[in-house]
Length: 396
Ligand code: NAD
Ligand code: MG
Image (cartoon, rainbow, N blue to C red; front, side, top):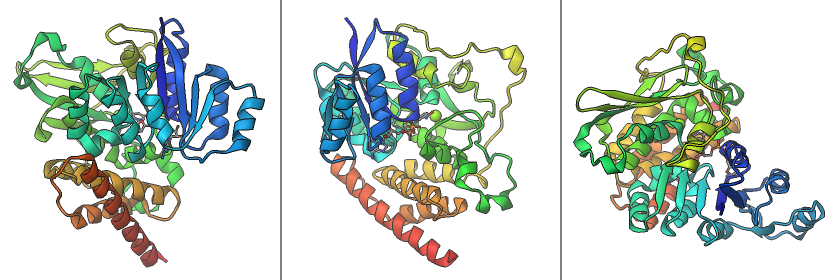
């Protein structure tokens, strides 16, 4: 019997890698549902290739013309419109596995719904965990869901950790070290950073990804979000989570144990590796990635990140230490600032300024229930938008 897979964010970069792996294992998985926000053509093409039971366009209202287009093209999937459909296909009893690969805060509700219905949940959508870490982990525990990290660093840490049966105490882990490529601007002269363009920011040296995470990688907010993500996933204190620049992106992360042993996971930088790991777990299945040839790579290098070049990393640690809804504020302000940068409205170096302003303006709310998180998200978006408008006014 195959397992039904719901793929939230099917038209994105993680979506494509997931479908590539799934197509290699028709004996294990069948595609139950594919979702996209508004990418009608992209979703139709995927439906014709993978024949899901449901296709969801979550960012569009009911549209008869789109329905006809799908039918005329020979698509037999049932087409659903609107945001509610994301939860519907995530909790359906015919879906066993949910891949959460929507970008940003929009992924929180359907990921939580999947956790609440006890699914095997493959989490790429790090923003969900950053916003609502305690609530998310509690929901997973209470409803017997299985959470498997897709972010390459967290998937690496998961692989390095002792299996649950080994019953190692939390004190056995001394340190988690998350590696970071340093992005496209790791050696750009600091005085040129105010002028860098969205195209330069999205030209990542090692990974091809969606535009939002590409900018996050350039500012290293991506690593900041990942520090928060690692804290919730593995229950390790912020001061025991470190970041190391490793420009080749071969060592995906490391775990140091009490006895001084350090265990790392290595592979070529290809998201199909963590995706295949999580799909197959505890089995190992073919991912399609090129085998690692260390002799051809020759050398691996490591360095500490430069706080002046990457202020977003410090902001993320500060939000994690503050706790409560501060990480949700950090995430919301970052989403607004990055979108403004991608639209050419905000300078690259103003991204951390907007986030810092939002963190300072936010009232320190301790609550971690969904309502408090969503309130913090909404008001941080307003503060960040005002800050963007103010900076645009100054620049004009
Ligand atoms: P992407 O931009 O390529 O794709 C995003 C997907 O989400 C698309 O299918 C899009 O239709 C959908 N979407 C966008 N906005 C939406 C909304 N408001 N509501 C519903 N659906 C929406 O992004 P990506 O690079 O595939 O990243 C997806 C997630 O995975 C992000 O959270 C990212 O941080 C994480 N991630 C990505 C990579 C990578 O290599 N791309 C690596 C690690 C983690
Ligand atoms: Mg990552």
